[in-house]
Length: 79
View (cartoon, rainbow, N blue to C red):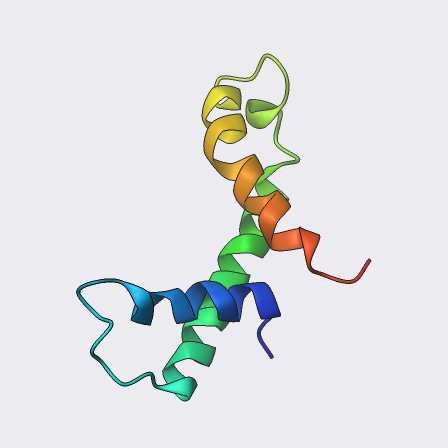
């Protein structure tokens, strides 16, 4: 079962100007959310790599893009 945050993000696809006239498909939304959850989990594992740590060659991108996404994604998950 997908997380609430992933469901919310997947549902946003039907709120864009190019898609707002389309009928939302709950089954498709749930599948998109499951995919998002797998990416979130994968990114959390990447955080253990030295490349993403202080002084690592990927740190700047990690801080700019990935950390905010992970904070958002994990803020609504129970501890």
